[in-house]
Length: 433
Image (cartoon, rainbow, N blue to C red):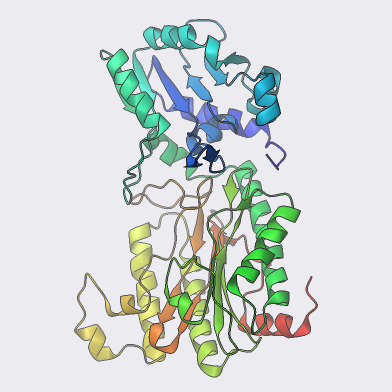
């Protein structure tokens, strides 16, 4: 890994919060993610299971975590299981955790190697009255790929059919959505590095540059500053490409007069940033581009002000829709007649702003969430309104990451340029901090 491990206090804190939510006499079992085959004997870069990482900080394949707060066996309330290394692995794959290193990272004293843990696993399960299993639960996505956790759940149901089974995800969704100060610091670091990359891009972009060259400038800054790399596949979309919401080809030339929409963020210690900016390729917005840009920016400001405790995502999105409706009227993109005749399930503004405004951010870019529960202090949301006009080859989106507090929303991207005039000034000056 490229990063310095986070404080073990974070993971100890998270485990205490999780075990307080467990039913008496139960054990919770977490598995690492699979190494995902790419082609032949190659793998995609490993990305740890967010639930396991959240509770122990172990960033390595073939790892397991057991939490059993009522375990009668001494020293086994928390158990970590890791892969045993050998000379062959050391030569071909490099260093793996030693038991002592795993203890230091996680703050867990009882560590076993995977090849010596079968009897321990069996004993702890038989001592328990029920088992918490960790499955990927997303109400907007059903994966066709069978995960390690899903295979393990099938094994547990077959091997221990008399045990009660419980779900970890409702607990994790309750806990992970509210960030501790350690997590906010990790996210802020990602944001700061992402800001450096954006300033680098402002200095680089010019008519004739290729989208993939801009992408290269971004990853250069991420890696040179010691982060893992991209938090997600970056969108570098010039001109009409900006009207494709998930455009990732990044293979077109940036033309004089176009606006370049860039959606990128870095990952560090498995935490993420998520930024979107739209800039004029030649350093100067046209009057129309500026009008659309400022409309999006006004909606963003209104939306940010609503990211407060007690609000809900559904009500928030409805209100943001009203702000957007007003701006689209002002731009002449929709009419009063369009609004009067609109389908309530598909309002007129959706023609030009078809996605949601915010999502949770943390260990995943689209982090765990309870869609229908009120906002609470400690949550981190993106805020990303946009207007997309295919007939004008123009798409503008702006996005910052916002921390909800009892004293009002805190914009974690507050020092990153966003005003249209500031963007132009920086692009023309060629002198960036």
